[in-house]
Image 1: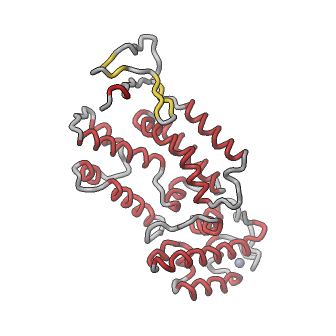
Image 2: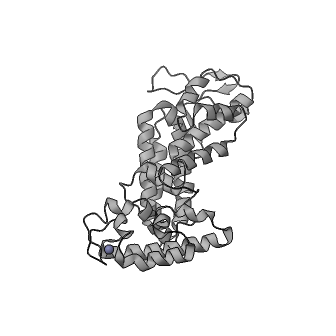
Image 3: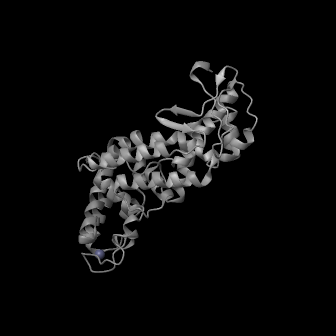
Length: 315
Ligand SMILES: [Zn+2]
C-alpha cells in the first residue's frame, strides 16, 4: 500500500458537526472528500456531482450529434457511451451497492435508460432483457465483480477483512460455491463472468454465446425483432403492410409476404429461418471464415422483412 497516495474516507449516512478529519491511521490521513478517477466521493456517498457531470456530458454529446450520426454503428456508440459515461459510474455504483440498495437501483435504471437511448431502443424494454441480448454484464453485476476482485486481492495480500461475510453477502450474481472457488484460486473471474452470461442467455433462448457481432443498423433491427422490442410500442395495434393481418414479431415468422426471405435464409445458411430469427447465436457454430458474412446476410434479410411488413409503423 502506498501511504502517500492513500487516504481513509469514513462513510456515514449524514454529515455531523462532530466529524473529525484531523486523524491518521498508520500514517494514512482521514479525508472527507476523495477524487478518484474523475469521481468525487463524499462522506455521505451522494454522487450528485459525478452524476450531474456525466449526464451533462451525454446531453452535450447528443446536442453535438456525436451519438446520432447515421454512419456510426451501434457498437461504436456503445463504446463511446461506455468510455465517457458508464466507466465514470462503475466505481460509485460499487460503493453505493454496499450502502444503499434503493440508490443503486435508481442509478442502474438511469444507466439502462441511457443505453437504450443510445441504441434507439424503446425505454420499456426490460433492463435484464437488454443486457442479455447485448451479452453484457449489468452495471450492478460489474460492480459486484469489482468488489469480488478487491476482496480477493486483500485476502491474497494477507489483509484480514473483519466483515468479509458482509461483503460476500452483497454479491448476489454468483453462487456461494463460485465465490469461494474464485477466492481459493480454483476459478478465474472471467470464467465466472462467462458462466453468468451463458446462463442468463439460455433463459432467453440464446443457445450459443454472443448473439450479435457488430450491432450495425441491420443487427439492431434483428435485436429489436428477437428481443420482441417491436411489440412493445411500435407494432402494437398495427396491421402488416404485406397482408393486413395484425402485426407482431410472431406474425412476421408466419407472414406469407415474407416467405421468400425466410426461404432465402434457410437456403443460404442451412438453418430454419424462424429458429435463426429468434436466436442469432445459432450461426456461431459456423466456421469463423463464413460466420460474419452469414450473419450480415441474415441481418439484412430480417431488416428488410421488418421494414416491408412494418411499413409506416416501423422505426
Ligand atoms: Zn403479414
